[in-house]
Image: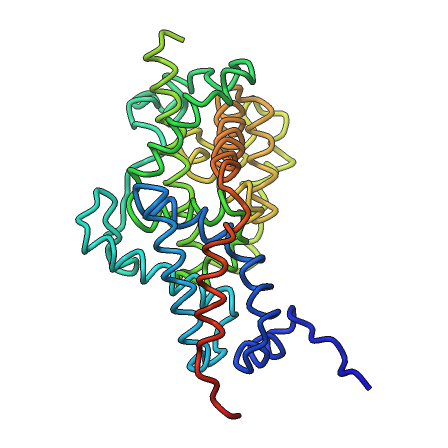
Length: 217
Length: 111
């Protein structure tokens, strides 16, 4: 009688299959996470070639580390932790302009979402209300808004973000992770995760507004 | 301050004291634009308590600039999402071969 098919979505069965050398399990893992790893890696290193190398190195670490995986996190979290470590090591080695410093110890950034002078001060009734509201860049036609030039602005702004903001924005807004998954991977509280995400999005928004004003709207 | 007093004070902040509704400015919880913009991500993530959310929704109904700021956050999220579009989803065959070879060459440890 043939053995029942292995359910790879079950973490225990998946890990057992990988440890037992089941190639189908490894192929399943590659299919499931390779694109995602590339998307994330691309935001931590400068070139696509570097990203590919980081991802490949990650997979090799998965292969050699599966026996040591203690299942205290999900397989997904474990794999992406390896990616972060590989990217960080590499950032230090290559002196990249996107250094991947210790995710846990970045000083908190307190820049507001909009410059303080965009809000009124003084007279009590209007204090804290807009003095200069957001420029209407989002009203541009879709062809303009989704043009390569605009996306390059977004990409550039994300590349300039502090590490933790870049990590959270990449995972949440590019790769579609849930807040809970991001908190688990980066060991953040829900509130801190949202602060980092908010700061990152605020900078991207500002970059889009700046680009819009530079073009003379 | 008694709990009852505190509860009433809170209720008045949110809804206004019914007795003073006829006054020109009912006391209700006001939302300042400068504070709202820092809570947009909380708002989009559903992380704002019900009571505050109602106040924010009232504010948004009246404030075009805050509504625009909220729209821009949504647009930023959509545009950022497009950055993932150009990542090639398929693993190229030669890389897959390298990885599979490494997997096959892995020494198996007995359970």
